[in-house]
Length: 342
Image (cartoon, rainbow, N blue to C red):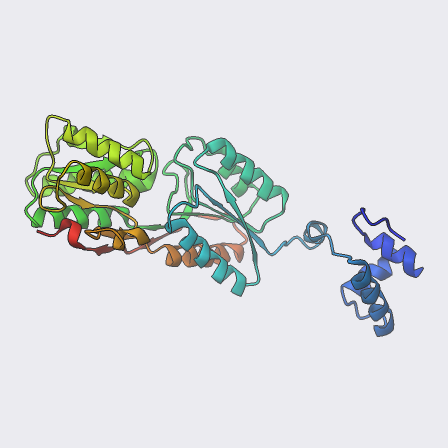
């Protein structure tokens, strides 16, 4: 009998029943050349002893693990959980399990997760890059092993033929800034995210382009680089603008949470939103409808993005040649609320 603290193996079952290891293996895999009586005997013992198949070994044998690896930069807020929900729904329908890893916006951690997923023989990797990632050798390694690689939301601009699903950040941000201009705001500030990732770089570029298209000057004094996407960072950015040489009459934040922090800071300073300073964010986090005034934002279509990422993975899985770049671009939705309406 196998020891209680040892993981049971096929060899343990074989020794207990006096059968060969190959017979046990074929019985567990429902092979037609094994009698139903033997199969029943094997499964009864396996259930009684709590035997569980080694899924990694099985994956190595058949060349397929039916597992999809997913790496997200964080699970703060509602966006990435919504993406993961969409991923799991479509992956489950297609017969795949999902392994979820969190990089915590750290490139080194992201690299470790990629290595771990490849060692686990996942059938594909879905990833949204950390905002500190500047080297892409770990992603190249995934592709060189002929494992489908799909980016979502954040994807590298310097990786040739990268496949991914993104929302049209430029369009969403342009529409939002244009909305503020049409409301009559003239000194529109921007809480900017890092230009090293496609999402916030596109939002910053749209901000600049929308101002210039409507005859407003782009003023670096009205652009504050966020240290992160927290409410505290937004409050600090708002404080810097109020104490700066040019006081804005509106703020477009690259994320929602900093806009929420700005709202709190303005309240403590006795300033009204939107009468004194209008606010707008990006992502459509649930809290945007719980504050007063409710915050204008852009919906990123998180769940739809997750579903589309898995569907793209399934397309790549059917191919035998090297995976060439495919990009699915989702249409954003501008949601206008009281924080930006005059």
